[in-house]
Image (cartoon, rainbow, N blue to C red):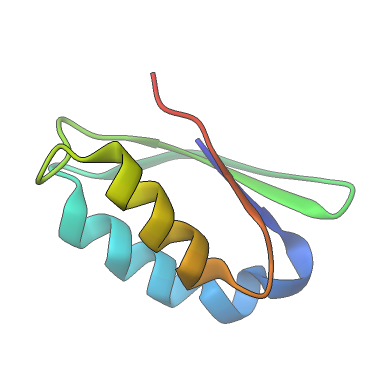
Length: 74
C-alpha cells in the first residue's frame, strides 16, 4: 500500500506507475481511496526486483518529492 499527498498525486501518478511496474513483478492495482488530503493505493505483486526494500523506499520518496509518501509492505 502506498499513500501520497493528494496535492502531488496527479503530477506523480504516471511516474509512480512506471516506477512500480519497473520494480515489481505482476503489478495489479487492487483499490484506491481518498481520505482527507491523502490518496491510498493498494497494489498486489509477486516479488520485488531486486529485493532491496531500503533502496526501493528511498527511490520512492525521491520520486514523490516535494510531497510525502507512506509505504507499507506485507
